[in-house]
Image 1 (tube, helix red, strand yellow):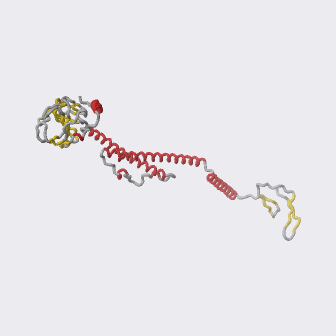
Image 2 (cartoon, helix red, strand yellow):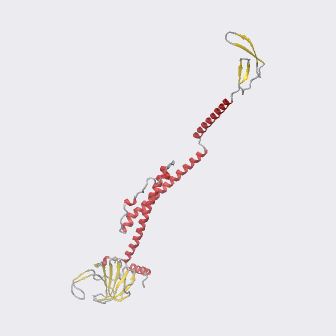
Length: 346
C-alpha cells in the first residue's frame, strides 16, 4: 500500500515532506519514491537481471563451497584420502619387511658363495666361478617401465632390481652346486677306486719294502724290489684294496706264481703275488674289502708271504704311501666287516 504524502514546508535547500497513514513496507521487496506523484512504488527487475543475479549467487555459493571444502580437506582430509593414506603406510611397512627379507636372503646367498669358493671347490680341486660371471648384467633400459609413474617408483624399482640380482645369483649358485654334486660323485668314485687299505690284517708285520736289494733272497743277486712284502702265514686272507676290475688272474711265469692284478681306473693297478688260492676270475668287478685270495709261497719265493705292488700309469709306486698302517687290529677288522656288508661280491 502506498503512503499519503503532503508538502508542508519549503526552504532554499530542501523540501520537507510529511508522510501520513503509512503501513510498514515488506522487507523482502524493494521500493522507490516516485516524485512525480509522491508515491512509493515497488521496484521490479527485468527477467534477464534476475537470471544474472541468480547465476551470481549460485556461482558465489559454489566458490564458497569449494573454498570451504578445500580448507576442510587441507586441514582434516577426506575419508577416502585417510583410507588411502593408511593403505600407503601399510604398503610401506610391507615393503620394509620385504626389504629386510631380501637382505637376509642376500646374506644367506653370500654364505653359500663363500662355502662354495672356500670349502667345496678347493677340496674337489675345482676352479672358482669368475666374478664377471657372478655379476653378469641385464640388457635393456626399459625393464621397469611398468613400475614408473607411482609415488614409490624408486622404492619399487630398487626392490625389483635387488630381487632380479638375487634370482641371478641363486641360479648361478644352483648350477654351481649341481656341478659340485656331479664332481662329488666322481670324486667319491675315484676315492673308492683308490687302493687305500692294507691288503692283509695289520697285525702282521711288514717285510721287505720298495727298495733296491743288494742280495735277492732266492737269486742271491742285486735286484730292485718294486713292491711291499707282508710276512703273513700260509693261507692268510688277502683283500682287494680298492674297487676295480680283475684284469689278470692265474699263474704268472715271471715269478709271482699265483697272482691277481686289479685295474682300479685312473691309471692305477694293484698286484697280489705268491697266492696259494685265487678267489676271483678275470673280468670280475669287485669292491674294496672283498677277499680275492689266500697268501701262499708260489712262484719265486723263499717262504710264505704276500707280495703287494702298485703301478700308476705304468710306473711303480711305493705301496706304503697309499695305506695307513697305524690303525689298530680291531679298527681294521671293523672296517673289513663294514666293507664286506656293502659288497655285492660273493
